[in-house]
Length: 252
Image (tube, rainbow, N blue to C red; front, side, top):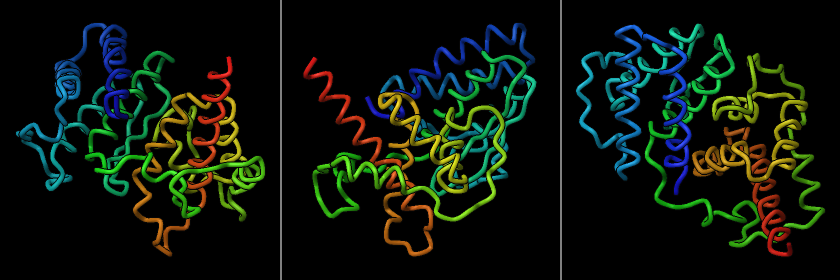
């Protein structure tokens, strides 16, 4: 199961939560639920949602990006129905979706899960896999991480002082939030991300770090890509903690 399929598996019950919490939705909200349901149908059937013909009549914002305007409308409509807002913008090759706190925790969590699957569906996955890039930044094909390596990773956050981003709710709860921490977060925010990886190596946070790393690794040689060391640090720690977790489970 790839990242998109895993996200779809979480988004399906999230749509059910939205349907239940919204009660009798407006015509627009009902249509938004159908739009996102079709996306999940495609993923569950083994088809990429971008392969579906885009007949959305209002492709005025991103006319060269199939389905982006449709999905943007859907998530924004559901966010408004949930008492909050959603912001969509291009981020590298994918559409970033950022949602705010809704009128209930159940709605907030559901919107975050839907936002995740939209982000992943908005771009095709690279043909290569994460496994083929293990050890990339050290020039190895297989990582052999030591305690010293992990200490270096943990210390590889922002060296300078940047103004913290203003993210409401839990920034670790979405791809957009973690991406913002890595790109613009201060030392405290980045340390919080690393601690979350250490404490829960098999969590959604770790999955999101892997997804983000896969999306940006092609820019490793770009001298203007200042956040690359932070992506490396978070990813390598994710790999290391995953290996440590597997070793402990094998011994048990």
